[in-house]
Image 1 (tube, helix red, strand yellow):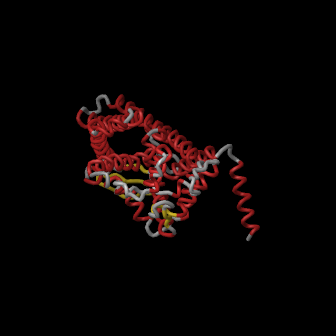
Image 2: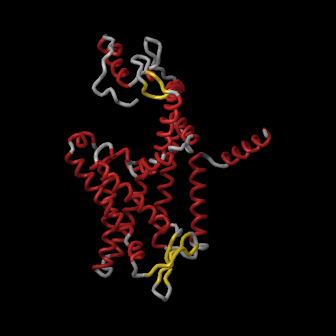
Image 3: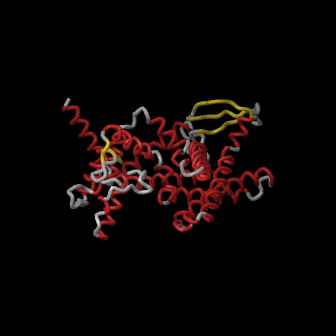
Length: 360
């Protein structure tokens, strides 16, 4: 058994040593996987749409940016802990429910108000559905062939999946899928921009490059996409070649920008399931009581992890009483900081704040 483990470890090390970095390994494996899937999906590259070549290049650059950002973030000690423990807890009974709430229904936004939930839902699902339509077409995983009988054959991963009437209702939704998602994104973006211009708190906190630029990019991509359909249907294709290039460039720029701006939380969002499982599991196992007021606010595991991560970086927030700052709930922690400036031991005063229900 030990010999087998040693052999597996040797093989893993040999693979890792073949690449200059984790980034290089991730890019090589991802691009190789895309090529293999495209080879299968396009029936040995016999069905390749060269008009989508630009989108393919933009997607590969996006993958490179995503791995660069993810690996830089994932190498941090706190991230390593919650990803490692999150993977172990992935098969909890509550994982499907948590995944639906965080990735599908966006319940975490619902608690902030129906207006914000609606704009977030429209933008989020508009972008996700657009990717589900665009990427399979770009890499040839899905395409359509038409016979002489007026029917389209939908081909997925090299297999004929279904046959639909060219002027039927199903074909109509296939043709206009990206138009529907564009309307969703435009509606959500307009709601978000209106809120950012009218809400005083949002106006005080927002920045043009970080908060508005992503919205403008999504709006431009969606509008130019709808313009292509308008030119094709109502202008009989007039101006479509130029608008096609404008739309393609806008998509490529957005894909390149995506991993490095506010929109990066879209591909990172699935990791929120890890964080929720981590908090819930260890909270149920061993809740931790504040060293000052005795209220339960986090798990013992999380408290130990915070102290451990700080010690790795030679940082210690030990109080005069002998415990760590991480072992105090947020209200007591705030009062403790005030005590350092005022000289009054406010954290020892048994008085509940108005926002005492703040989560640790």
